[in-house]
Length: 359
Ligand SMILES: Cc1cc2nc3c(=O)[nH]c(=O)nc-3n(C[C@H](O)[C@H](O)[C@H](O)COP(=O)(O)O)c2cc1C
Image (cartoon, rainbow, N blue to C red; front, top):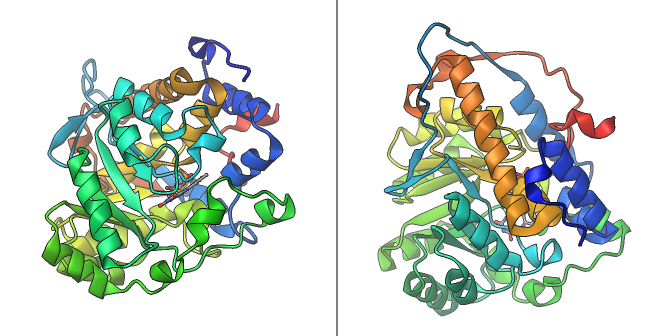
């Protein structure tokens, strides 16, 4: 791996360029791609770009705190590493490297069940705040066994991803004949995921006291049902545009979910978040945390654990700059009054947040 000293990265587009140089075409396409026309991928960025800021001035912003509460703990930024299957395709050490970066910087990691190493080894690799995300590939007893293992290894919550009843058609992977290292095994038992219904959510809530995250909620209707089931975290996501094509951009869905949930559960969101200003927009609309999917992978692929930490440091600088220029000194002061609708000015795409890449 060509790993420049991570300190040398001054802008995120340098990280993206290094990641691209380090990854073979198969893993690169797997990372960047979406499904079919990739309309949902683009809408994630388009929806973020369709929000402008309404800054307030003359407010003494010498000291700014971008820290946030996360499941009752304190985190350095209101972000988490979203679950990524096959992290080992991007960086030696896979999920253990991501855990080290998350712990070193001070944000939580969500571990995917289709990632190496598994939940025990990843927990042992670093003392990160962590959530375990499961793709259901077995019966109730199989799920319960994973909950027990997650609890025993210090995972603060358990996540079911619910936007994968079918596996989206990722045409870049198909066209490139790219077989994900974990795919053969993970595909077995997929009917269990397709069969999931609210009955399993009820069963989980009746049986387990580990907080439950439902990832992949994309309507107020489902957010309302989840909240009625006592789900602790409603995670708005379209899987980074990798599942249903022609969905709305995630941040466009966020306000209706926040309104439906009415503060009775936490709301997290992901999809296209690449910049500090993106994170600030989500918090202003009522999200408690923002998931980062491709961005941490790009940092890891660029320069391993230091590359991930550097990507997060730059994101933090962007958040602090954005907050200061909005005239606020903490996330709690943000609200919809800081935002306005605006026409996007950049053609949207998976990497459109990095315009210098094209130069
Ligand atoms: C390479 C890759 C693998 C992913 N694997 C999983 C997974 O195993 N489980 C899951 O719930 N989501 C998975 N996702 C979706 C992410 O958790 C997240 O929802 C999405 O990447 C957010 O969008 P962003 O990449 O634009 O930040 C994956 C995304 C990528 C890019």
